[in-house]
Length: 81
Image (cartoon, rainbow, N blue to C red; front, side, top):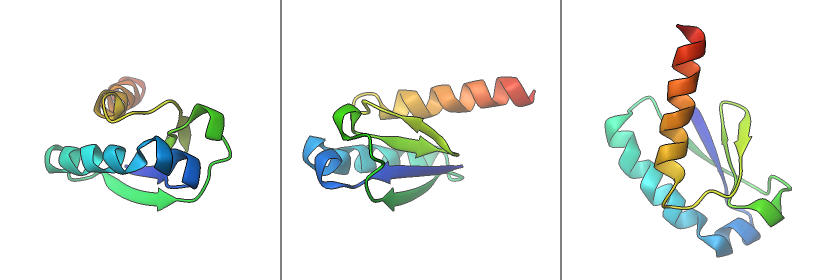
């Protein structure tokens, strides 16, 4: 699973580094998690933005990023059986 984190100036100022730190911690639990930095997603007003396997998630914070990723995995696994 690939998670891209917007590292553009707006998301950076909103705390994308803290989001990256939380995701690095989550990698210990989910070693299949690949983190990739990305330039601006063009959704600055709703940042911090991340993309998981092509799906964009907005208004991400260090406090909700782990829950967001785990919810994505749960929904993906339900769909795939």
